[in-house]
Length: 249
Image (cartoon, rainbow, N blue to C red; front, side, top):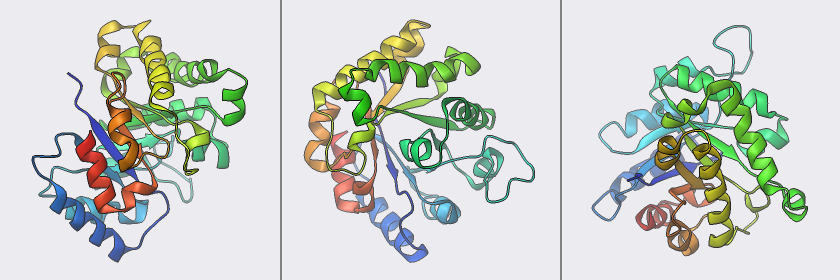
């Protein structure tokens, strides 16, 4: 049985005071209604604060990005070893904003995936298509290419300790979201792609949906058999809303 996971991607939002307030509110929401695993991914500057404030909590801490290089003259970058040292459990790699705004290609994302696992953390590998690609009917080809870049260098066994997040680019921060049926179709394709290499690993792989997830649509999305939780953007910055999403999972 796959344990549901809801991860909040805070992106570049908040201050130290706002981070403390939000985390304290989220801790108060913990209880029997929330059976899913929950993680928060604050900006780099507040990771240490998050780890400290959540020390007595079941909430996990993740980072939004990582450098593919282990150490060296890479001004402004953060290594996987540093994230592990701070106390992160999860690291998002290949988010659509990193791919589109910062031109990260599939090969770089694969290297980041491997860097995260080399330090015994869990990568949340983001895959997804643009609106233009969906309209051209090449969604599966795009997803396959993004998955295969990691499978080629890391092997299918790496997915036993990884999470995949399907995030249709056209639904990120737009207020639009894939229908539960559209999400299920792509999630099933992802699981099938991994199953082609190893059925057992595919069966245990958690696949999250990320694309304007909110309390109003979470339950319907999470009810689909291959949707194992969510990678939540803007709604994760509102404790009550995020709590309702976690409860739905």
